Length: 109
Image (cartoon, rainbow, N blue to C red; front, side, top):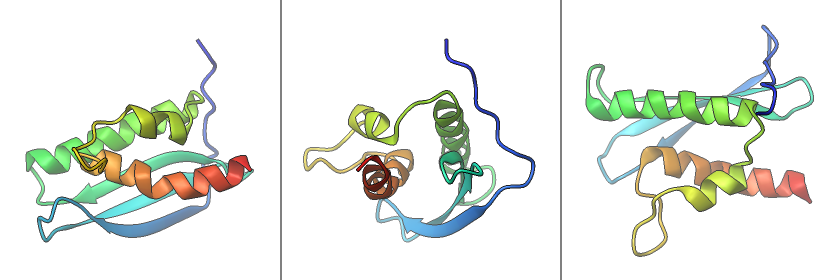
């Protein structure tokens, strides 16, 4: 198992809004970065507190953050998520991953 790369207590962050599922509901996504600019954590909030979709979004963000901290690549996660017949992500977690994909690919070049 690889060592976990922990984030500094103070770190830069970026927040953006994303829509998913035609629910007429937005989600706020906050990204936290290491000092070298690498993505290290993700927070997703949206929906009403106590709703299952809100809990799934929060828990999914925790799992994405842990995966990143243990060295998983955004591209790998993007190829592993559930997609519909048109190739679109089937969950808010997948939509966030797809939103991160162009930036992740640009860093690899």
